[in-house]
Image 1 (cartoon, rainbow, N blue to C red):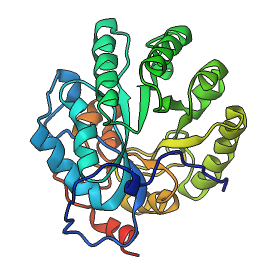
Image 2: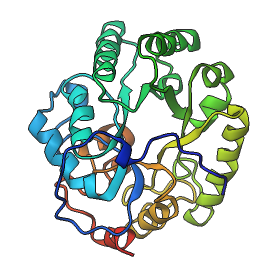
Image 3: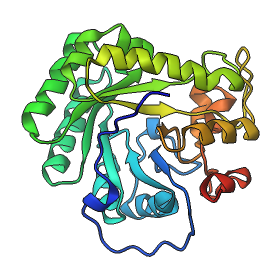
Image 4: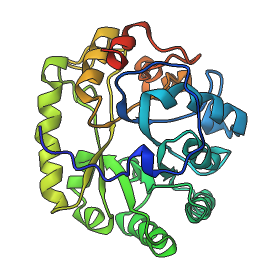
Length: 290
């Protein structure tokens, strides 16, 4: 496997308040993709998340990781950075960028404000925007440069699948660090071959990055859902995949989210390390206490 070269500062370098974890964890994952929504909440329906809910969900995962990545800066999500810092977590704060220009303005404005307040260690201007076809490459790069010019001293990036990034070298040139998503499950690759597949394409991104730091911004394996080619979702395969990436990547994701089944199929509800109620899945404990 290639050298990872992670960009983030360690937890000891992030401003924090003393926080007594009641969970004894001997091994942590590098980072978690964090969404605070509860089982009955669908963010596509305009749900606003309370500070109390965000803190409650972060307190569950804080003992198990050192970094979190977020996906929005409106509807309460803009509060995640400050709460995460208070729990000793480094933050990669994302703005949700879409084809809605007015919503994009709100996202970017909030991102810049919270970054200037010291609540972000990295800024991610959009997630899979090009994959969805929501914006042109030029428009996306304009957004990226706008944030870079507004917030100096904080690395600014964009996250998308490795294949999309490889086909958009101008985006790789525009960002400070490169964040790529890898899902061998969606490519129909068996669990036995998944790690070698990611290693191959990761090296391709590293080459395209031309010396810039490359971070695995999303990767994961569902514990349930449909078989895709040779990729079988199961609790055992999820654990195997997580164990391979525990110290390397932002793992997708912290919690199961039932609402995603409406958009991804049944497997959409089964990507989490914790279930929807915040209970660590029973076969996950040995990952954190080997």
